[in-house]
Amino acid sequence: MLGFQRFCPYIARMSDKTNIWKASVLTLFPDAFPGTLGTSIIGTARDKDIWSLETVDIRDFADNKHRNVDDTPAGGGPGMVIKPNIAAAAIDSVADDVRPVIYMSPRGKPLTQKRVRELAAGPGAIVLCGRFEGLDERVIEARNMEEISIGDFVLAGGEVAAMAMLEACIRLLPGVLGDSTSADQESFENGLLEHPLYTRPREWEGLEIPQVLLSGDHKKIAEWQLTQAKKITKARRPDLYEAYEPDGDDHEHD
Ligand SMILES: C[S@@+](CC[C@H](N)C(=O)[O-])C[C@H]1O[C@@H](n2cnc3c(N)ncnc32)[C@H](O)[C@@H]1O
Image 1 (cartoon, protein in one colour):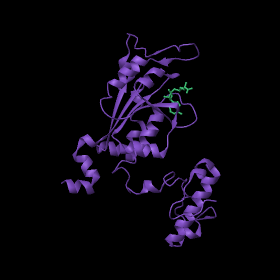
Image 2 (cartoon, protein in one colour):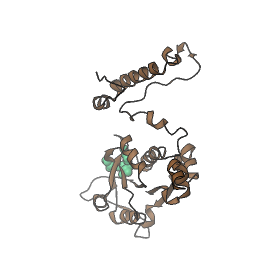
Image 3 (tube, helix red, strand yellow):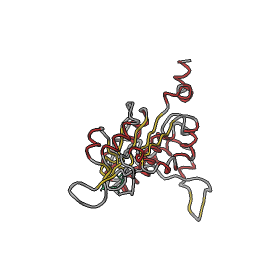
Image 4 (cartoon, helix red, strand yellow):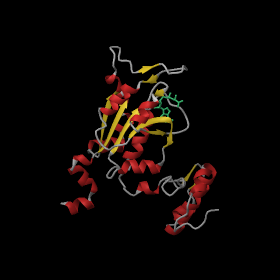
């Protein structure tokens, strides 16, 4: 059986529920979940027990009868701050394992496909969604939270950010994508953005599919796709292009 499991990771995952990739989401809006995580391939993967979702209502850990979770910022200023004792109690209610504890935050390290791959390869994640002005700094330190941002803009809360990050991880879990190799050929995987894509009809509104893609010459097609990927990356993401390291199939970096 063990040999069989090695060659069929999906079957192995199914037969041992402790292998399920576990997402625990701490939020003031548990009704927002599963949201898009319940649809399409991500929702199907949950039905197949490839991953599991647990939502924890931070308000359940409020320490007064009004169920308040926030208070005014020390030193003054606008808005409210989530109290450390309440956030910590919510985290401690699930943090009984080795999963990273992540705080979605515009101040965090920008999320990358590299970090997504690392998270997907691990046991799952505990994700706290902020609201108001954010979270008391002491709980971030005391619970060793990793702050992750999904971009240089400010959302009203961490729920959409958590969904984006979780979706990116879950689609990489074995058995989620129909063609398990397709994730390897996408934007960021080789340090470049993806080349342009086309499908039938061959001609649409006077615009043709580039001839080389119809040639059947796989070497030429791969060369064209790489050239296009480099052109797009150089124009749109000079930062990525600068860091791009050509591999064995690509000797140029102009
Ligand atoms: C209104 S924002 C707080 C913004 C915070 N006062 C600041 O200036 O950095 C409320 C919550 O939304 C979430 N959030 C907002 N923008 C985000 C982003 N770009 N990435 C991840 N989470 C974000 C965080 O959980 C944050 O605590």
